[in-house]
Length: 102
Image (cartoon, rainbow, N blue to C red; front, side, top):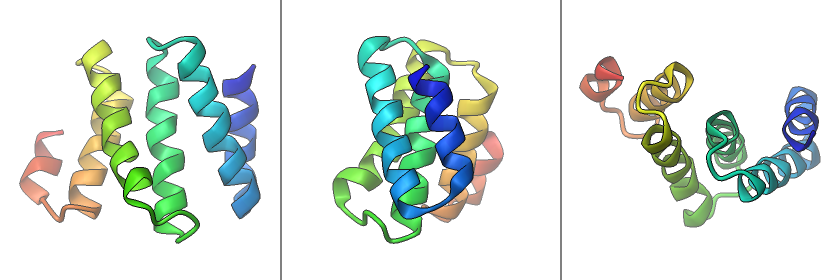
């Protein structure tokens, strides 16, 4: 239920909704640390918060990558996690080669 509520909040797009969505995704992975889709969404919400200057902390920035690392440790072939990681490599690291590898 936390995951679904967070997904809804992500569609609202307001700063307060994004903050709350991130909190709910983090609660979801605290309850089920093997919930790959929720780890991907932790990264996604963190990316929105960081890129929209809502939370520019180093912790938030690092959480984007750490959450995806966690997702791919659980499921190394998860397409959503690999696609999102490629996007982060291109957008945040300007590493087109890493982005192409996925």
